[in-house]
Image (cartoon, rainbow, N blue to C red; front, side, top):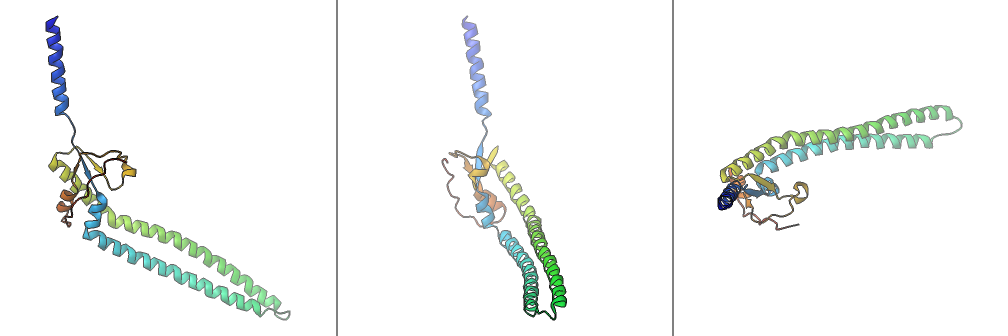
Length: 190
């Protein structure tokens, strides 16, 4: 009977030691802080802003054309009299059709501009996001970390409690050549 107890105790200690050895190391990173420190973000943001302004200018030109044609139609309507009723009515109907077409074009241009701006952002930010992700992976491997939580937005990653994890934000920033600022302490709980 004692042999069985000793065997179970030995087995239990072995399992406990293996479980302790198999513990996973957890770290955290603040991607907002990393992106804010990268000069590429400023360049990309300026490019996207300029692209957005170009699209806005195009739409504003269409709106200006619409307003000019609407004013011309309103002025034409003021000249309506019994003598020219038929001719002016035809002109006003043609102007109404033209205004409707131009209104649709404005709406389509707005929708297309939103798509184009989104595509431009994706085109420019995706390589940078991949670069940051690779740096995070390299930093985590260097530190022997198994899991890294992004503490920039606790709502999206379901991080409820963060106590004692290793913050690798500074290491990732140094791998990316960004300015190293002191990392803010990780939040304790939500």
